[in-house]
Image 1 (tube, rainbow, N blue to C red):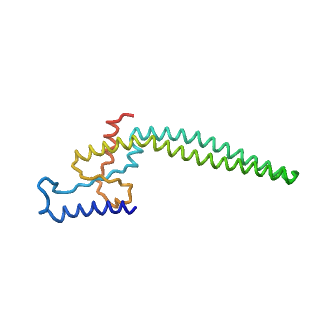
Image 2: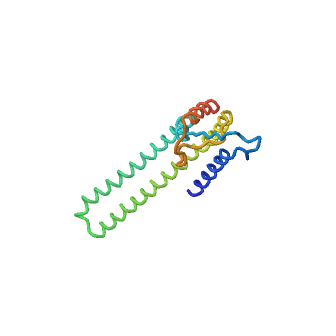
Length: 181
């Protein structure tokens, strides 16, 4: 977090030095610093490739949720059966049944955690190439419009930006044009 603030502080100090000391500027440096913003989350959800990735991920989630739900129901059923039968069971049988239910519950928790990690990994795999391509498109769009910096609106660092400096819509259009599907 500190590195983020340091980088932002350095950027702001650089921007202020350009604005405050025009006589120190070299002849080939820009007369003004132009900063744009992009809502990467919105863009990621709006580009065709992002929608496709989200659809693929949702299919994975549904199949995993069904398996998790089925196991949860099976454990609940075992527990209910145990409660009904425990009145007629001896202590040794009760202890064995309790251990069996606990082991199954632990396996269930482990399975849930593994599925969660798998889904996060799958999401990262699906999104990484889209973000890589988005960064290339942002670079092109920003260069054409003469922006020196493009910041992500979702980061805590951007507290305000003018709508005219938001490149999100242009990013989505340019991305979809350049990267079909």
